[in-house]
Amino acid sequence: MKQAIVTGGAGLIGASICTALAKAGWRVASFDLNPTSADAMNVRCDVGNEDSVASAFVELGWDGIDLLVNNAGIADPVSGPIAALALEDWRRVVDSHLTGTFLMTRSAVPLMREGGSIVNMISTRAFMSEPDTEAYAASKGGQAALTHALSVSLGPRIRVNAIAPGWIDAGDDLRPVDHAQHPAGRVGRPDDVADAVLYLAGAGFVTGQVLTLDGGMTRRMIYAD
Image (cartoon, rainbow, N blue to C red):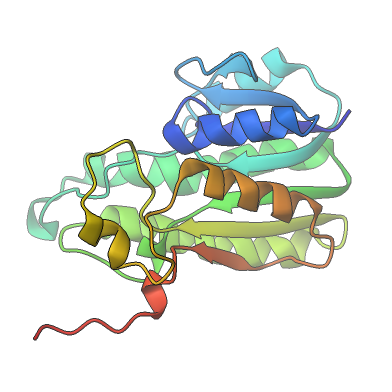
């Protein structure tokens, strides 16, 4: 049986990924500070903390991994004006995304089997921004660069790709205009991201790439009237 680790498995997207992998026949472990569903083995882990990551791998006890999904991270992209942004808050965001991806990958690589895959969850915010989101954008941009660097260093034994979701429905009360502004005609769903993970896990000739999953929004030119 193929084995996968999903970080942030208790979150909206992470839980969907765990469920999709389990349904596809994978053995799944969720690394998170909170428990997820019964679709995954729950391993408590703060991915931005070196000691916590090391302890989590000891608790896991697997001797082989086929897929690592680096999905954990602080979800709120707004950290406030740059002139008032505390170093502690900057590091908290960067550690949860970029440092966590590094620490998890460093621990997982020695266990990864031939043909293994790493999928880093970045964001369209790696390429475009709203005000006061510098820490989040920098984290996601760093993950994008780390993705192509790792693909060169770890290939051909391990493939490394990233997914950049756009607007994913978190159960909010969405308006028709929220869907209509997307060229695809709707806001994204968590299962859209899970489907993309399953694709990249098996796409043997794809590595070093960022799969943008945003319903076409980053291809749409928008100007104020």
